[in-house]
Amino acid sequence: MSRDAFPLLLVLTLALVVRGADPGAAAPGEKGSPASIGGKWLVEGETVETGREENKRTIRGTIVLDQGDDHYTSTFTMETMLPTPGGAWVQTHVIGKGEGTVEGKTIRGETRTQLVMSNVPGVDPDFAFVPRTTTTRIVSTVEGKVQTDGTIVLLIESKGEPGQAYRPTRTTLRGKRVEPTSPPKHRSE
Image (tube, rainbow, N blue to C red; front, top):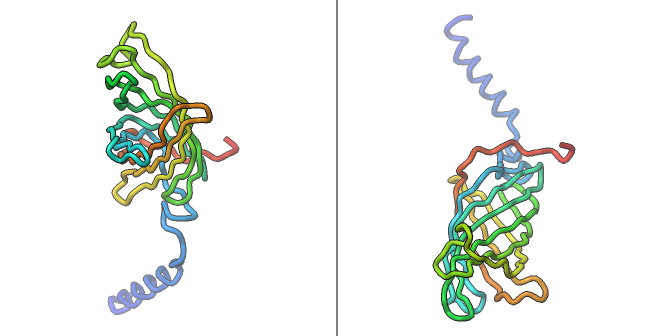
């Protein structure tokens, strides 16, 4: 091949590649192609009582997301402080499970949560031999999105299950993945 033919061949090759590309095709992680959300996420944020915005508390912990093709399951353990009827604030673990759908970079689902409180103010409920109480059962709707920087933002609306005394809350969490992900699992696995 002559030197003069090389630029022409390069231009023709690029034209074929560009022409063959589908401009309407979904990029990885966009609608039609679920983003990889699987793995362990370290999250933190704030919980606010609905209608009582002055009642805020920080919350932090871990969420493990197990992703299928277009669905996910989650387990989580977080920590926050909650006031007791007597006025003292106690360290509280927020534990639970959830499930939902994955569409592009967005997840939507529902969680079931319980609060685990130490009966001794100021002492972690996981401390050995400390009496603790498992209290309120909570149901939440969750919507989240993986951001372009790889972090995840979750918006959670919570209320007590029927018969449970729990003021509705709104929680916003932001986090980053701290453990590698696994590829999405197919429903047949």
